Image 1 (cartoon, rainbow, N blue to C red):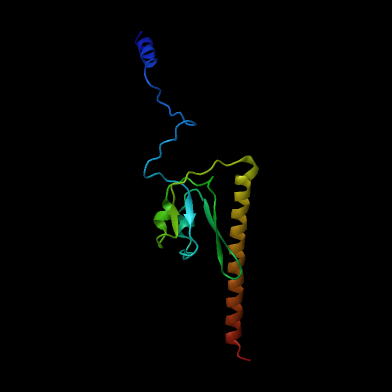
Image 2 (image 1 turned 30 degrees about the horizontal axis):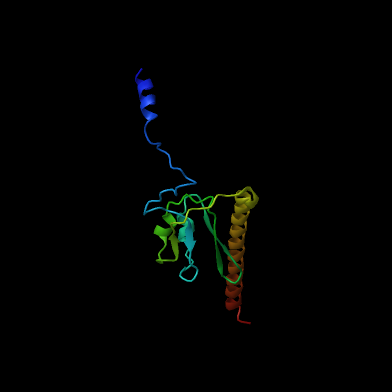
Length: 145
């Protein structure tokens, strides 16, 4: 009987839901949204990549030493660890912009797996080339012919 009275009472109360299409959703002041990278301020230390729990940030490396930042909004859990671990203020920030939904046409999961694979391969190739150059330099310095 108690449940019936509660149900009848709820008929006369305002709904607890938000009328989304007609009224905007409330966003708190400390809302954590998308991560934004500023390459001009970045020192390319990759601490944000190491601190990211789900692996939403990865850097690839070209043979000339330049690095490229990659970010996946669908993998990110918006924890802000990348921002907290960045030694350079403003190089990576968390905006109040919510992430757009991932669409099937984007193929965001499979393309991200490929991006991570290519980034790791590019870094391994860069390190192998650096080791090869260091060995050649060392060998050239030992044999003054």
